[in-house]
Every structure is written in C-alpha cells, then in structure tokens.
Length: 282
Image (cartoon, rainbow, N blue to C red; front, side):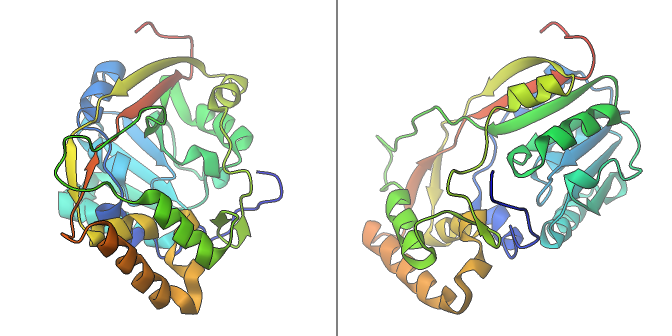
C-alpha cells in the first residue's frame, strides 16, 4: 500500500455498527476448524485484528483461553461487551495494540486467526512474529468471505441491496479515491498472502470453503450499519455532512425498496490453514 500509512482513525466509530451491519461468516465455520485443527480444549487462541471479537468468540468453546488484539479502542470495548453477553469473560482477554507490536509478552498459542484483517498490517513483520508465538505444530488461520462466488437474489422475495448506487453516493461525498483513515487507497489493499506466509516459514496451506447461500432479509438500518462498519465509509469520514449523507442514503434505499426490505444471500467463507512446522496432511 505505497503512500499510505495506518492511523488510529481507520475504523473510528465503526465498532458499534459491526454486529448489525456485517454479514456473519458461514454457519459451520467452527465445525470445519474443529475438524481440521482438532483442538483439545486446553490450547490458547490469539485473534489478530480481532475487531469486535467476531472470530474469537465463535471459537471460544474450542480453547482454554482466547486473546484478541486490535488497535481500535471501540472494537476492544465492543469485544468485551460481547464476551460478557456470551458468558465467556473469564476465558477471554482483549488487548488494545497493533499487530506490529506483538508479541507484547502475550505468551505462546496453539492457533492464530486473522479474520479479514491481515491486509491492514505490515505483513512481512507480523507473519514471522506470529509464527514465533505459535507452539510447535501450531496453526495460522486466514479467514475471509469467498470473493469469487456470485451471489444473486434470484427467487428471493425482495430487491437486492443497491451496493453500486451506495458506492456512488459515498464517492459523491468522500471523493473518487477510496478513503482509509486519514489517507487514501488508490489501489486498494494488497493480496498475495501465500507468498508472505511462505516467506515467514509457514507450510501449507490447507484450503476449506464453508458454504453459505442462506437467504437473508435486511432492513435499511441493517444496510446503513453495514456501510458505516466499513473503513472506507466509517462515520467520522463524513464530518459535518454525516446527517446529509445518511438522509441521502435513506432516500436511495427507500427508492430501491419501498417495502423497506432487501434480500441477500450469506457469503461462503474461505479458510486457509498454515502450519508453523512441517505440513500436516489433510
């Protein structure tokens, strides 16, 4: 991400919108990881770039302790709240630090997870650091929506979420180049995770796809929350024009679906498991 530097406003104000706005990972993700990793319930999980605890809390039953790290204070507060709501406060720890500041005396772990967060980091610094934090035979798990699938609303009762029109509205308010904190990302975030992790000494990967496709019903509040949960349209970016933007957004959504309901399909989830030692057979 040449020319861009991380700053602490990247997801400022977005944490409160995550649970409502972001689409969940596909059901069955925890089962797939349990089968692949075979945890004994005694290990430790570190969730790097944990956000509001989405991945860590979904896997808490598989580990003795989960540790989530994230640089955004709002995300850490929301993770703590959700851990209390789920009744797992005693086994969950939330630490406000950047991944670049690891290992931060957090100890060793059996599994490290990155849920759509690795691309925001100095990956060639973070990857070998995390590898050194893993016990022999430990695993790094990279989790994301499956980007290559086409999800239509054919056969569903409501119109699709008008993502293209929403993107155009954001560009009208924030400019044509994608915003990210105090900077911009003219070329988006990087890919090539496999090369980075191979350089860091990981072996693998094992790839799993957890199928989605379940129909979802979304309201304008859900859709607005999705938009405000994104770094490129986080609430602070609109400044004094926030109310004007939201009024235009609500108008756009009403015109797209006068019933106030949208249909969507749950994305599939793509998982890559990398091992800190020699490659393990599937």
